[in-house]
Length: 335
Ligand code: TXA
Ligand code: MG
Image (tube, rainbow, N blue to C red; front, side, top):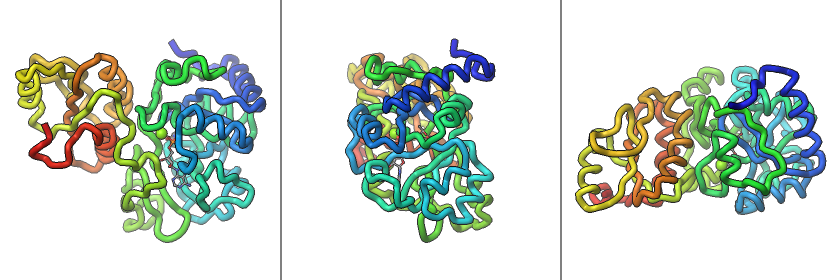
């Protein structure tokens, strides 16, 4: 059982221990409402280097800096446009990352050499308590090795990094379950770089600019937009809605050991996991399910594609990337 973080008496000592470790330049596992982060002092280049080394992440991939309050934005961004203020007021603390032009003091190690910086005030009480206690920004990419599935429990972080972290704070299972929405406000019209729980319609409404929040063409600088990402180690394949049962039978007839990630209910005779057919509950359970299926040692994971509707866009994005290595491009070869 995770501790009850609503009890100030247990949360505060944990936040103090975490802040002390961070102050020594250490990197810790930190819960957020989206996924767990691998957190270090964003003003300490040694700590930032250690995050990259632990993740095995290429140095030109920027990390998100987490803040306790939107009032800290001025320390990290050289200008805070009105749109950023609007979105911060509406969605922070919460699962939204703003890309802004960086302040002069921000190190290249954080931004991958770009002129912009990703900033977010997370909505998890443990993350906020640690940030307040620490008093400075925390660089925190998702706490997984580069390209692998993001962690949504402390146990997942332990499985990724185990003894190489001095501390993994347990904040229970993440309530959102997929990474924050990323919106670029660094110039030109606002662009969504990574879809998430906060959808384009909600962003457009908050921006009072319905045309503004289109999903941009993929930027190679966003590691989450690489074609293969968020991926289990087992070959995983996306199958169109309504064809799962036939595909399972076909693979089983070919003698393959198949694990299934189904929507709503598992096809008869198959083994695997059925996730809820409601997008928020599905997102919350997705990465945990991918990790469990990966551990089964199957030859292939078949994933039922979600409905082609707006509320499933972020999930469809993660599933496409999780299956990119295992799904042939040509539909008729997709078996
Ligand atoms: O929900 C989240 O955002 C989680 C939690 C821990 O906060 N963090 C997360 O971090 O997903 P990470 O590093 O795994 O993914 C951050 C994404 C990457 O795709 C990175 O390329 C992009 O944000 N990013 C960061 N700074 C950027 C920048 N200046 N311009 C464009 N993309 C940026
Ligand atoms: Mg990540």
